[in-house]
Image (cartoon, rainbow, N blue to C red; front, side, top):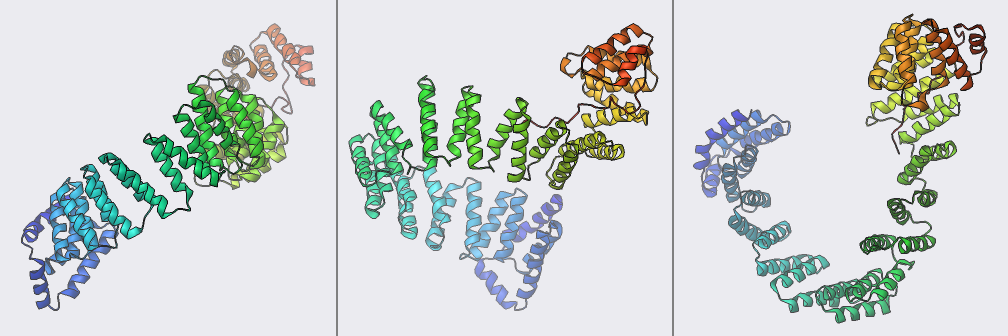
Length: 595
C-alpha cells in the first residue's frame, strides 16, 4: 500500500510544483461554477475512507479532488498528512506552505506548518511563522508558548520577556508567569528587576500571604537572608498556622546554621494541627533523610511519628510512612500495630491489609488470617487474594461447605483481567473440599475445569491423580498427571508419594519402591507425612521386605495414624488394603501469591 501511495504521490509532484497561486486558483474556481460541488464530494469521501483505514482508495480520491481544484487548501493540507506518514518531510512542507498561502486565516494550516518547520529543525522559519500567528490569532495561546520554547533554546531572554508580557496581557498576572520572569531576569543577571517581579505579585495580591512567602523564599535562595526572615516573621505574626511560612522559616534556620531553632521549628510545624497532612508527610521524609545522613539513631524520628499519630488519629498516609521506616530499621513487630491502626481508620486500605495478611500467614496465625480476609472481602470484594487465603484457611479448619461456597462467590467476581492461574486455583480448592465431603464426581469436575484454565496446575494434577488411584480408576491418566508433578518438582515428597502409590496400584512394585525411597530421602523433611511412611511400608511389603515394611507401619502409627487397618497390618504382618480410603487426605492447597 505504501508503495502505491508513493507512486501516486510522485505523479502529483508536477501538479504540486506548478500549482497556481491562491489568487489564480480562486479565479479559476469562480469561472468553473460547477466545480465546488464535485470537489466537496470527492474530498469528503476521501476523508471518510481515510478514517476507515482505506488509505489507497482515500489517496486516489484526494488526488482526483486536487485535479478538480489544484490549489484547494483543504486538499493540500490532507496531502501534507500523507507525506508526513510517508516520511517525505520536504514534500509535506511544500504542500502545507501552499495550503497556508491559499487560506492564511486558517489557524490549523499555520499550526501544522509550524510543527513541520520545528520537526525539520528550521528554527528561523518556525519562529517567523509563530510570530505571525501570535499577531494574527490573538485568541490562541499556543503560538506564544511555542515561541517561549524557541526563544529559550536560543537564550533570547528579551524576546522571552516580551512574550511573557503578551501572555500576561491576555491571561492576567499569575504566579506561573511571574516566576518565569523572575527566573529569566536572574539568568540575565538583572536581580533588581527579578525581585521587582515577585514584589509586584505581592502588591497585586496584598491579602494573599502565599506570595509574601514566595518572595521570602526567593530572597533566601539569593542570599538576602535578613529580608527573607522579616517576610516570614511578618506572615507568621498574621497567620501563626501558615504551613508555608512555618516550613520556610525552618529552612531559614537551617540555611543560617541555627540547628537548635531549626529542629524546634520542625517540631512546631509537625505538632500543629492546622498544618495539612501532605505537608507533614513531606517534612517527615526530609527529617528521615537528614537523620540518616547524620548517622543518628531512630529515637527522634520514632518520637516524632508517635506524637504526630496521637494528634492525627484518622490520618492514613503518615502511619504508612512510619511503617516503611520501621521496616527499614528491622522493627517489624512495632510496625504491626501501626498498620492495624491504619486499617481501623480505613478498612479499604488494601496496602495495610495485605501487609498485615502477609505477616499473619508467615506466623501461621489462622484467626488473624481469617479476620483479615473476611474484612477484605467486604471492603474490596473485587480482590481475589482475600478469597484465596480465606478458602485455604477454611480448608485447614475443615469447613469444607464454606470453602465451596466461598470459591463459587470468588468465581462470580472474575473479570477478563483475572489470571487463568487464579481461576484454576479456586477450582482446585473447591475440588479438594468436594472430595473431603465424599463428593468425588463434583471434585473431579472441579479438577477438570481447573486444568482447562491452567493445564500445569501442579496441586490439581497431584490431587486428581491421587484420588483416582485411591478409587483404582483411570490409573493410566492418573500416572500421566502425576508424572507431570514430579517432573516439575522432583524433590517434593508428596508428589513422589502420589506417583509411587499409582505405580503400586498398577502392580509395578519395584518402580514404586524407587520413588517412595526418593520421597523418604527428600530434604523437605516437614513434608514427609505419616501417610508417606505408611505407603512405604505397603510398597516394601509387596517387594518382599516384610521386616522393613513392619518398621514403616510402626513408625506411621507413632507419627499419628490411628485406625484398624494399620493395626491389622502391624499385628498380622501383612499388607491390608483400605476399603473407605481412610488415607485419602493430601495437603495440596495451592500456594497463593505472597501479600
